[in-house]
Structures are given as structure tokens and as C-alpha cells.
Amino acid sequence: MTVGAAREFNWLGESGVLTRVNSLTCGQERLGFERGDGMFVSMTGLLIATRNLHKVEEIRAILGGGFRYLMLKDFEDAPEVEEDAGTFVGNATKKAVELAKWRSRLQDKGCEDTFVLADDSGLEVDALNGAPGVHSARFAALDTGDPGNSASAENNAKLLRLMKGVPMEQRGARFRCVVALAPVPKLREEGSSPVCYADEAELGTRIFEGLCEGRIGFEPKGRGGFGYDPLFIPEGYERTFGELSEEVKNRLSHRAGALAGVREFLARPRRDSTTDEHG
Ligand code: ITT
Image (cartoon, rainbow, N blue to C red; front, side, top):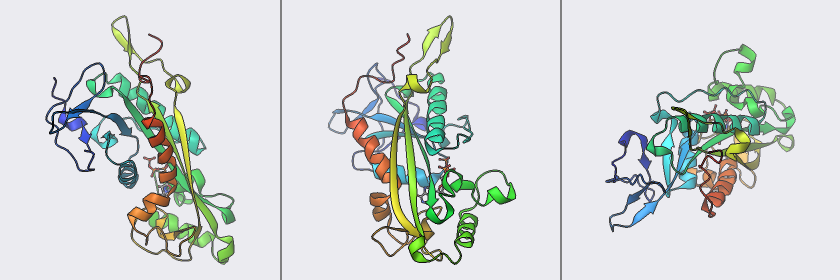
């Protein structure tokens, strides 16, 4: 029995409440924890590869307990991955694969049965031929050339400006979310150095997609959610995601759609996909 590094592990108990861990089992099998009744509970680890804390909250709320969550903010040296692929699938895959390889190279006990979960998402507006799309996070900055993501208020202001005069029946839009799930591969020893050869295909990265159809309102409404939520009215509703409750958003959203696939995949019996098959 080994006591794990507390910094690394955020444990969500089955109740959804952060559970204090007394002991971690770091055997060849899986990490888990001992419940009060002495039963060993095995949990798959999910490293959530996003620096957007709103996304982290939503992902955890949607997937719930039963997973061992790790956050990028817990790793000071986690690499920044440039999102230059031009598609949601390309960017999500790049984030998941690069971070899975990096995590693998750390060679500690926290890697067993762990997947990197990367979310690339955005808003597609029909009247703008699908813009802002993959540029959703830095829509306003496309005009100014400013580095990094734009403030949500600036993105929303630009969207409303471009949609000025567009009638409600032509304000159709959708949120799209692509989640890439990459297993953290086990390293193999070569000489005295650990080596990770796995590329995207070898890692067996899985892609899950979710869509949420709706329309763009005429003014920002509500303070809930993040990003374009104050402007987005989901199909079947009259209020924006900014006005609707978290529970409603997390049931309807593009992220919920993609994560339903992730949950279903992780619930299936699988062989140890984090094993390096080249060894
Ligand atoms: P990471 O790359 O670290 O995950 P990010 O915010 O830069 O964080 P993306 O590149 O995927 O993430 O950009 C997503 C943008 O799309 C986000 O900043 C919002 O502007 C918008 N967006 C995505 N999902 C959204 C949601 O559920 N509600 C509102 N806006 C959303």
C-alpha cells in the first residue's frame, strides 16, 4: 500500500462529493480507494486537458463521480498545445495526444488506467457561414491580432454587430463539441531511457461529438454559463443558456452529447488500453 501524492489526485466520491483519500493502491492493476466499508473501488483517471475552468466544471458535473479527475492546473509544467489544426477534431486530437505523451513521460504512479480528455468546441452561426467555428475563443481578436483568447463580452459584441438586421428566422446556430480521449501509454525502457513512441493512431484516440441546435438572440441575457451562452437560445426554449439553469444546460448541451459517448465507451469492458503494445 502506497500513499499517493495528494497534490495529484482530486477524488470525487460516488456521491459527487470530494472524498478524502486515506490510502491509494498503486499496484499493477488500477488506482482506486478504500471506501469506509473496506471495499476497494477502482476508478479510471481522467486528465481534463483544458485551461477553461468553465469547461472543467461542466465536464465534471456531466460525468459525475466514479472517475479520478486530474486537472491541468495541478501540473505546473504541463505543455501549452497550440491549436492550429483548423478543425475541432484536429485540435481536440492534438491536445489529447500531446498531453497523453507528456503525462506518460512523467513515469509516476498516477498514470495507470488514465485517459486524457480534450474538448474543442465552438459556435457555428448559419448567417455567418459557420463562423466563428474553430475561432470561437478568439473571434474578436481575429480583427485586432491580439494574442490569446478574447474576452467573452468582446466576442459577443462582435457577433451581435455582424448579426445586426438579421431576422429571428435566419438566426439559426449550433454549438459543437468534439471530445478526444487518448489513453496515457505506458513507457517502455530503451537503454536507460524511457521512450514513448505512440502516435495518435497507436494511442487509439477516440473521438466523440455533440451538437446543440438553437438560435442567436438580439441581446445578451443571463449571467449563467460562459462564452456565448448569454446569446444562445437552445431549440425548444425561449431563454438563453445564460438564463437557464446549469442542470438544463448540462442536459441539453453539445458537451453533454459528446460526453454521453465518452461515458458509454468507458463503461465498456476493455483490455488495458494504456499498455504500450510495442514493448
Ligand atoms: P481550452 O483550449 O483550454 O480547452 P478554450 O476556451 O480556448 O479552452 P476552445 O479552443 O475549445 O477552448 O474554444 C471554445 C470557445 O467556444 C470558448 O472559449 C467559448 O467562446 C465557446 N464555447 C464553447 N463551448 C461553449 C459553451 O458551452 N457555452 C458558451 N460558449 C462556448
